[in-house]
Amino acid sequence: MPIDQSNTAKRWNNRTTKALVGLVVVLVFVYFAFLRPTPWGPMGENPTAGEDTLTAEIVASAIRMVDQSHAAMVASPVPGNPPGVPANQLSERQPYRRDVHAKTYGCLRAKFKVLPNLDSAYALGLFAQPQEYQAWVRYSSGNTHVQDDREKDARGMAIKVMGVSGRKLLEDDGVPHAETQDFALMNANQFFIRDLPEYLAFTNYLGQGSNYGYFFGGFTPDLPQKNWGKMFNFKGYHVREMMLALKTLKPPPDSLLNTDFFSVSAYTLGSQQFVKYAAKPCAPTGKAARVNHDDPNFLRQEMVERLKDGSACFDFMVQRQVAGKNMPVEDTTVEWSESDSPFVPVARIEIPKQSFVENQDVCENLTFNPWYSLPEHRPVGVMNRVRKPLYLEVARYRRTRNGEQPLCEPKNFDEIDPDSCEQQQNSN
Image 1 (cartoon, rainbow, N blue to C red):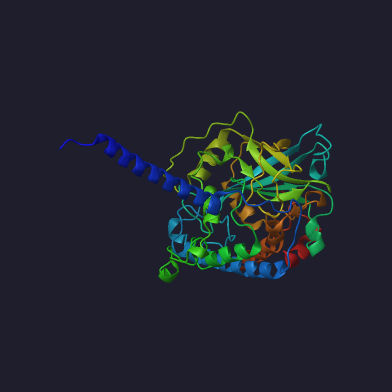
Image 2: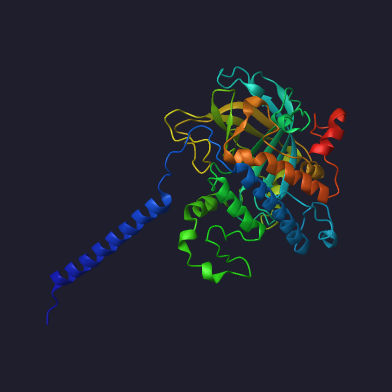
């Protein structure tokens, strides 16, 4: 019997059409359920009730994360961390580290040079006059544990500018006067948590040692007690947050000195405008040093080799909020589009030739807190509000557990303010 090719073609076309329609339906569902842009929130500050209580719980959760991370590093230390410690002493010489950004890649000396002839919209606070400052720059991994550099992770760049005169915001909370201005940046331009209740839920799972429980509604595939009963709790899943979090987990770059970093959260610049910050390698970027990428500390080693005979440079930049654009202050999951408002250079960070591994303890003891700030650069938004007590309490806890006296905020590379040391020890 001859084959009816027209009917076969029709059936094939029908199946194809149904498949395409089904695919479109799935894509539309995924888009509207998880991927569509979030509704516009307030473009200004909008503190909500109960933030103090939630913040206290988040601080307690962060302390648990510090303990959990320390126990994991004692049980299974990563070779070369801390640097210079013999392999057979790594477990007993593990310090208590930060709750996140636990691994220090490098603690570098730098010059922070404010550019001349800035537009009046930018020439405020630290940027009011062209001036050169000394600065410490700490490069770090985002994970709660010290891990192999080959792992996907967020990376951080924290900057402590020294010799900055004027009242600082932490003085309002009883912290002694400091001559520092801090900036905290990461190699992503948006965060994955929108508010404090969600942040608390996320940190609670991290405090239990689970990186995935928050995203899967309590199902913890990375822990022995997997809570199989919650595996199908789809209403509790945080898919959009998981997708944003995965965007922050980037493969390791060839060089941290050739990586873009962003503040993610917003700040004031003066009293009339909100901004975000970025540090981008100066053009043309330097060539990454050739190192063994199988080394679990190759990102540190790359900087060691690069800075033996050469230098590095970053443009420190400001992005202004633009009226009528979706550039919220409270919601850090929304990226501020550079097409709406480009980043403008206001300073240059010069990292000269140096040997820096011996500086490791300096950055381990320092606190990089954006609230060490002039009023003109006040941190804003919920994620910045929680940072103030969180960073101070975690710093106090880890220093106490390490048996270290708190350091005074440095005035330069070689000096601290002797008049504030005793007060600093009692408050930091």
